[in-house]
Length: 337
Image 1 (spheres, rainbow, N blue to C red):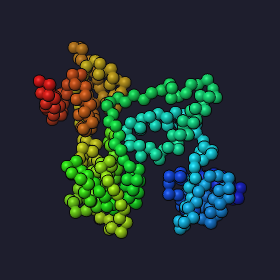
Image 2: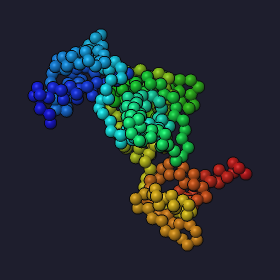
Image 3: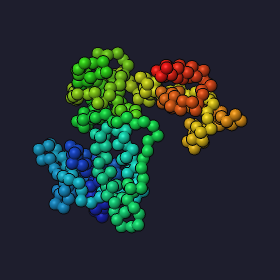
């Protein structure tokens, strides 16, 4: 761990600079920064931090909220230097991440990554300008393997309020419009978790006056969120892992099954490159098809995958899954008869 000697003042200040939040953040107090620095091995008082910040403010675009008690610090604008630096590999990874997440997450989620994504783009542009490498964004495309729905619009204020309530275990009074509601309804919720499925984000919460089961609430359906810090927190235990394991409201991980099916050679070629499971076995039948056997979880996503491959797969086992897929295919065929 770094020592507390005066010779490490520059190193300590460099660590502190990296902890200062962006301009869209409420800011951090000197005590906040002192606590975080202590976890990195730099044990100094909050007064020392304040002196450091006051000195650095003369050369860096730092902003202080003097009306807050205690004072809060943040960047006034994008820092003039990249903090920390970024290697080309990280920039490439972030560039791909940006393009992928843009099709899956509401725009308000990407706001937290705005600075790093912008830095990645600048790094890649500098590499292209300085060397023989072309601009990465001109050479690479991310193509989704399935239909991707447009992410719903979630106001940043709604997202930030729900995230704060979730992290701090604070009840929220909300206006929420469910699928069957004609207008927004007032509810008091106890946030328990958050789940991203496809392009939608859901808050998992208990509702005051409801039953003991947690329910899911789509973030785009919130009209207003107000933290109720004085409201007592319920004693009902909750585990997000248990919630998923139990298969609540189609969010579950599903129970393990041994999937056996007959697949086409075309689908078999795809599965040889990207297996369904680590123990997957493909065996040629000699009749132009391939036997498939693998351990996999029985989930909504698996059903969608099987139905999406239509004539290229015939489920043989387990019997319950075979019957379910057959019924859905018959129902689908009736739509075109």
